[in-house]
Image 1 (tube, rainbow, N blue to C red):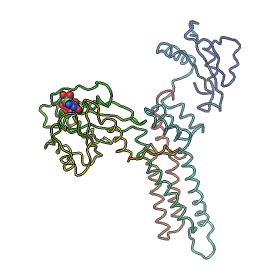
Image 2: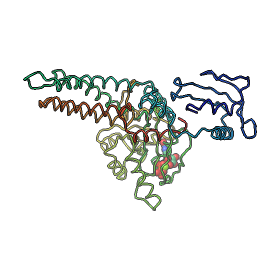
Image 3: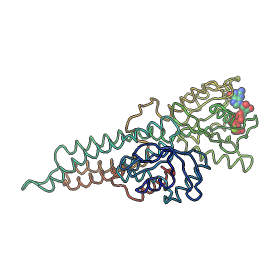
Image 4: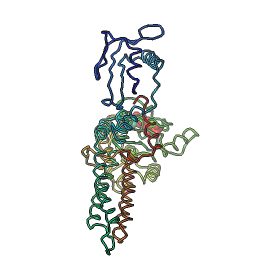
Length: 436
Ligand SMILES: Nc1nc2c(ncn2[C@@H]2O[C@H](COP(=O)(O)OP(=O)(O)OP(=O)(O)O)[C@@H](O)[C@H]2O)c(=O)[nH]1
Ligand SMILES: [Mg+2]
């Protein structure tokens, strides 16, 4: 519970084991949670009051640490509501923390990311952001721009007599430096996004090449049905694994061919929908069968995507020579695997990460961009700065340059929440889970 009445409500339903209970701030007290109506004990619990402003929300906050079963939680929650509290909205605790200045907006968003982190890298980027890495960077950039803005405004307000007002000579260089810093941050976005959201991989290919076998092998369990009958998989099957601390969402799909019935046709159209949204496609060939016209047609549909070509069934006599594949793929090197026996699977996992992250695995920097909202704001700021640069170069009055910089500052402020509209705040916090 958060708010000025947290202690009052808490006292109504808590019977401390040892009386009196002074509720010293940040101290746990042991006792019972009671039903006020019947006097029955609902649970044995620990209760802690954190007085404002030293709490998560910055308000008085009271926590009841009770047993975790649905029955206990429901009974205690009902009692709390009867005693005068109301249910928090999604993200309301964090929203209050933000409004009370306990954290900036990028840190508030990091809380949601941390709660939802599915892999080690996602946890790392969320934690760095929660610690204020990005907020600090934005603050530095804004401070540099504010300094330039102040100088420009001085040039507008106090022009030297009889001299055309001109922007200070160092302005262009300073703006350039800031733009360079923003470009560097934007360059890390793709990596950060993949850490935060995970990598979407689609396994695609003709029927019977071993897509479902590969999914099962990557998962380490018999998740998808495997049979020698082409057209076994109709719908796509999605499962997640971890590779090098990154969540990798794998989709096994229906084999692509001329569909034999409406179900298969629907399945195949879904493959292409999935492919469109994939970060990388594992295009699977059957090494014991050779490349067919069907394979080449599928490959033709993957031109816009990052593709890993894997030649499966390497345990069988091969009909598909390396030269065939290289010719068909105009030079890219296929990876030979056996989904049935497991060879080449570790290499494939590594290759998936290399393909999406561009080879070298970068250090998890303090201010790695991982959120599309932040990226969008930085991009708009970069555009305004480019405009400022052009205004300077074409000798426009400092007033114009100043306005560009104000616009850039406005965009940057949206990241940390200084200039974020109520609508956007609503949208951000609505995506939180209730209770955080
Ligand atoms: N020898 C050998 N057989 C394999 C290998 N991978 C898959 N198979 C066999 O190939 C047949 C088809 O495998 P699936 O995994 O069902 O193929 P699929 O691509 O999912 O097929 P559809 O769902 O019909 O598109 C099965 O009999 C598998 O046992 C492999 O690496 N080596
Ligand atoms: Mg299958």
